[in-house]
Length: 113
Picture (tube, rainbow, N blue to C red):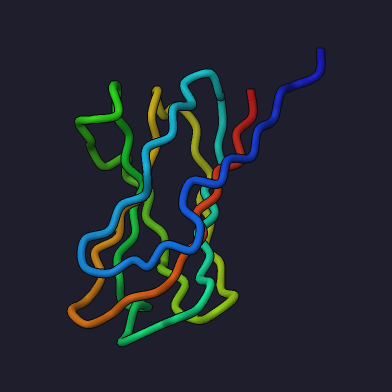
């Protein structure tokens, strides 16, 4: 049997600053995921010191940290990724940006059954 694979663009051309979060994505059917966080540009301040992390949720409303952290991509074209398994139903990525820092991002999920 051929495995199913889906690529979902969750945040595109969004300016992240302060306490930023992607939209939640329902992917409970998937057995594994790769989270891709890419800096598209418009960088202000020092976003490279930001802390990005994966969160999981049973319902898309209440969130807990999954435990995976990503180094925030601070330069245009830079990309960070994380591989996940056993993540439940909803995924999102949040970032705590330093005061005055911001960056335009692209967040993509690659999901496999």
